[in-house]
Image (cartoon, rainbow, N blue to C red; front, side, top):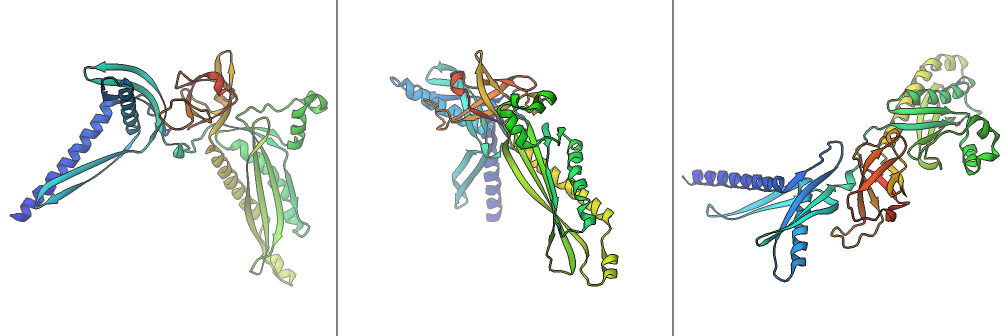
Length: 393
């Protein structure tokens, strides 16, 4: 009998706790209307209404509490962890606690309306909630890459049969990249990076710039300089080992700012190290087999490098022109309508959030630039001039 009563009490506690969770979630849904729920983004824009008791003679405190309530509900709408515990004494429930914690935070908000209802003050807000630590999901976007002149080299102690393939392997880099998905490439392998940097200072001094024109590299575009080195390496076995080192350097924008540089090693076991020429000959790996293996490694490493490039957030510089907030990024760089961007470093007066983040979103998108709108209408556009905006994916 006692065991049956204990089981019934446990079922009661489970049902009670589950009911409280459902009520809590229902409260959040009723008070927070989600406007944008893009599954490809960790940010969403929501509307939430907070309430507070009217304090006679102290309306500012009521406003602050109602706003805090609205911000809390907005944060909960971005996701919540629900936990709790129950205390039982002699088969009697004496304490039941549920804890609801928001898993996201409010990045920016604006007040939509304020109203009074008998003894309560209501404040409705529009807010953007999310987690900035997880705002990159490596979503594929168009990569506009200008391929510039690279370098290759083979050490003198490398067998001539391998050395002769070095320029061919280097040239294959220029053939692999245009075939990759989401890559729009321009082959300028006869143009060196140093030369373009000098021309950018003053193109009038360059005859080639006047006659052939300059590569059109926008703010969200990239330039890539490949390098390939072949060298002999000492191994612990009886084989003659060689190493191909692939270096990829990616530069951003028309000012060629170095964004990333990575090296990848491609090992080659070429032949058995013996004093007998016959043994060397029969143990030498077929050059066509080596060529296919190098091709496989080049494709793998270049693909991996560009996937990491996709994980980099789109960054642009803001400018105010004719009363509009402009960013030097557009459709060709992968911007979408209503995409959210974060601007940091601007001091916000009377902010409840204790940070300097401002939310903007795309309003008009063109090929290489876009018009943005700040979430907070009180932000002066002039204060955002020359600042950097990072777009979340």
